[in-house]
Length: 313
Image 1 (cartoon, rainbow, N blue to C red):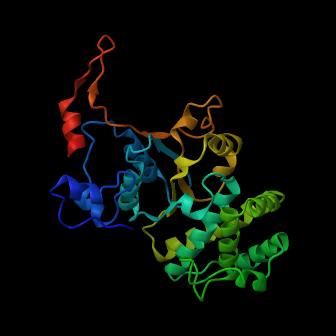
Image 2: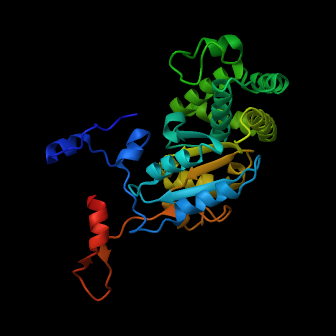
Image 3: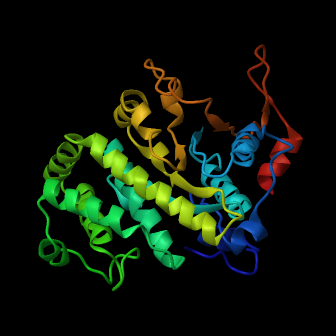
């Protein structure tokens, strides 16, 4: 994470050096530099997501689509959602491009990413998933992928992967290896996905058993938590073909994990000829700030001073 300087820039040169409009605010920077734009743009997107998370009962699950134009502030608003709801959910925020190939994402990738990150969070909290469920899942995984402890250990770097460590179970190491192969090799990516899809019902069932176990143990130790909330950011950067594939062809599969998910769907998918998100609840759109006063009869539009000042701030 890049931290902004303590002192604000005082010249155009120093402002240019620290300015990255595509980088979201987080941590202390979110409190220090965030500008509330609720007076100059609609905020139904953020309020809508918050209403869903608020009304949801413990151990209930939902899938939320979050979108907007590039540069509209989606990632920063997702960071605010993360911060606002971390008292009620164990929030896992991740950037999809860090986990898999953003230009060729398959729905099974999300299954692997979800259980990988939840298992890691459990270890961070000093909790363990049910050993019988883990053993059954690992045995099936070994069988379908033809991987062993030796082949996995020889191909991953524990020091180079944040979700691993000396105490990491075989499943965690195998998930790291598979996702690395999916991200780095077209041939291996295709083979892994085809292998998993041959018995997708078993994959989904085993992951959901583990997710259910994780939530129950999470809530036993932390009764204030309703469950896990996974935010998949940067998914709006996938190509149109991939977006339609995910949110139209496999919309049902994206909603079948027992975990609350927020997906950043590309805005174009909402208006594609396939109507790619018709199988989801209403998407939540972060609008741009309109600094012009639209007038269909005029070529030279007037500025909206309030919006312009907000953007300058």
